[in-house]
Every structure is written in structure tokens, then in C-alpha cells.
Length: 173
Image 1 (tube, one colour):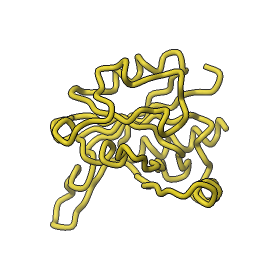
Image 2: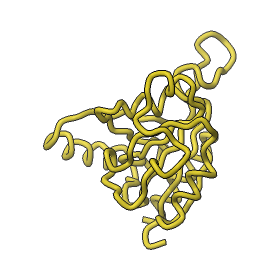
Image 3: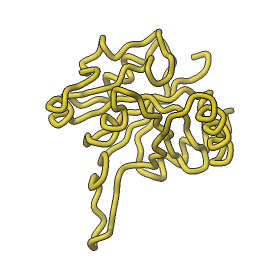
Image 4: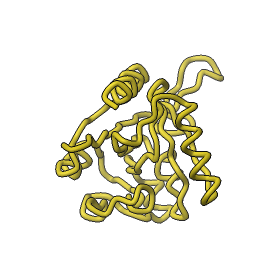
């Protein structure tokens, strides 16, 4: 697992993504340090089954209105999976529109548990295949900040966040 996490973090760094490693007991402090207000989010128990940490206790508007989403600087979600060799995040969709929280803000803060980092895309797809065959659903695979050079110079934030900050929750920390 340490090699997979290391490859994931190297891939993220190569993409210009900020990384924080933390234990579950320090997760609230790591999230608070990573956000720029105003911030919106999706309840983490809806995306990863985490009941020990709640965004409702943070300066984060959970289940935001369209106005709150439009005015937000930061969006906080969990990532269902990480792809080690690409630094990609697999963001599953929820009925509370988690994809909007991750894509319509300038800064996306994604929380991922170390155990959910897969070594490569084949392993991630196999895991998703099993999940979606049983429950249905869909996901976004996001790799780094949004960037395009369609019209000439590289522009960040054209189709998603300009900045991405990934918080890796370490096992046993």
C-alpha cells in the first residue's frame, strides 16, 4: 500500500496538486486548513460511509443551494478511489449533486482514504465494475486541475477547478 500511495502522491504532485497526509483524528484540522471560504460540500457519509467526521461542523455549507454553489470558492467532497499511476480521483455521483460541488468551484478539496488508492486504472475500473454492477451509478474520473489549450495559451479552470487539494487519510494514523 505504501508504494501505491507514494506513486499516487508523486502523480498528484506532477499535476500541481497540493497533498496533505493526515490521520482520521486530525481530518477536521486538515480540511479547515485546505479550504478557502466560502466553502460548500457534500456530506461525506453519502459518498464514503464516513460517520466519524462531518462537514456540518466545519465552515462548509453542506447540500448547498444553487446560489451558495455559485458564490463558493471551495468545494469539499470525498473521492471513492484514487488511481496511483495517474493521480486521478474517482468521484461518484450522489443525489445531492456531488459532481457540481467538485467541478463548479475554483478549489476542489478531495478527501480519500489510503485504502481506496488503487495502483492503476485497470484495478480502479475492476473495483468500479463490481460496485456499479451491484448498485448502478456513475462517476467522474478527474485528473488534476482543469486545463485547456484549445484556443492557444494554457488556461486553468475553464471546465472545472483551478486548484485541487487532496487529503489522504492514512491507515492507523
